[in-house]
Amino acid sequence: MNRLILCADDFAFSTEDSLVIAELLRSGKLNATSCMTLRPNWMEDSVMLRSVPQTAQIGLHLTLTEEVPIHPNGFTQDGVMPGIDPLTRLASRGHLDPTEITREVEAQFDRFEAAMGRPPAFVDGHQHSHALPGVRPIVLAITRRRAPGAWVRTCEDRLVGLLGRPWRGKAIGSAYHSRGLTRAAEAAGLHCNRGFAGHYGFDGRFAEALPRFLDHGGAEHLVMCHPGAGKRAGDVIAAARRDEADVLRAVSVSDMAAQRGLAFAA
Image (cartoon, rainbow, N blue to C red; front, side, top):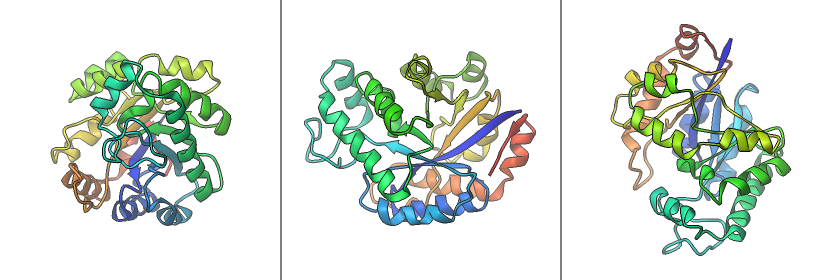
């Protein structure tokens, strides 16, 4: 049976958001979360993960956008890393310093291991920045060395999945930017999820979106979500975080998955 990985991104985005994600992991509504280890509250928040089920996968959410980096670098402005669109332009033009990217990725791995005492179960990127040109080979090389058993997120999917769910524009765009990632990961001795969903408009329609994300699921079908408390100042998806948390509390994810031929271990 194909397997569902329902992953809450952005653990440690704020302590309030971390509390919600940890609650959902403990109650079997999620079976994975991806952690922003550059956040100043990460070390304290990581203690919450000690009480989640052993079936929960805890991963590293490499962050190269919209946050203060661990190490100063040449692509920040006023000490904050750029949004994904400016970062993508820099990457596509070869304007990111590989030494700076390597140093930041290594530091975020260091912080994960310092808190958890082990490598991450998987590696992905905030706003999928880990898949960018110039960033991707660095992430794969470091993951191979430091977490050889980890899988790496790709937004690639079969065409039937990309076209068979609503909100296909974002999904196709992310799949395009991730193209070749599975092949590159395999060449590095790593593997990726097989099947990906989770894009929608953050518009209060998560209850409608969630079951559709499970349609056309792949063998290791990854669905990203962003539940939380939505209390951090400046969070542009604060309302969506609260909505997603409420929806997940109310539904049986395992039943929803089983109806679509997916096993959900939580």
